[in-house]
Length: 253
Length: 84
Image (tube, rainbow over all chains, first blue to last red; front, side, top):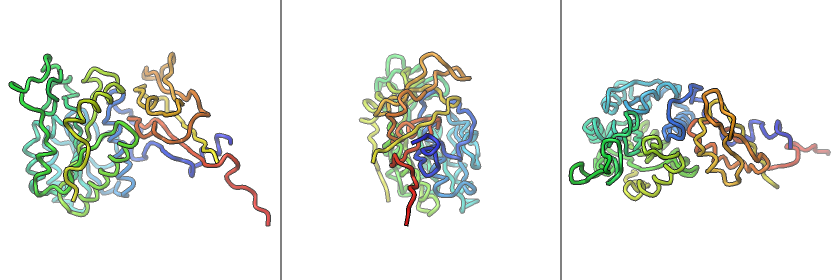
């Protein structure tokens, strides 16, 4: 069969989602952010909400998220994305409002905003990218950094006695009554990407149905910050991150 | 009926992260060992086009959306002539 016949639209299995524009992403090669951006663009197109979606971009590596997905965006101060999302959703209740935050943004400087927005049960979706490190600023230790993990500010490894334990913030959020979905996913294989797409779709549907706050934690890699190749980083994540941040639903009602 | 897959690479968007290469179960893709794209990355190219089964694993894991995957279930023409 010739290539032109195979390339007909009915044979198309996978292509870059149309909502993801042609800007060259600034992320490092192999970064999980790109996959999650792609999944979000696919889900919004699938739900037909491209004209009604407002994303809240964080501070961190994903600070330029507004350059890559063709929807309305707002840029929040560091950690304040859930507060801005609260205001946006209350003023425009017919819109889909989601925040896109990293672990330094959501679990460190923005802990208060995250917990109180979730406790109030704001009808927003929170996409939380957990790579256990501050990627953008040069690989410093984050609250989610694993025990004995070496970073630029913990060169001997994270010492629990002086630096505390890694923070499982999703487990804390799952206890709150305002939360309707708290789930942990990953994007290292095709199957995991499909699962992530299902959970993000569910989170967006919850937001539109007014069921409460949905939090999707994506356990991801930072190969540049971890000083590994992308495939080594995926293996390291499976071996070390998954035992501490197990994949699966903590709450899904 | 054999499945025929076809994968197309947007070489200018590719950053050469190698994730699609390791995700492929039939060893279709490979990073370009010598050539680079305009941004200086060793982009991925289709090394064994005939081995592609169109599973789209490469497309799903690609962080930059460089890969377009097609698959057909039929080797013969899609619309055979029907005589009454």
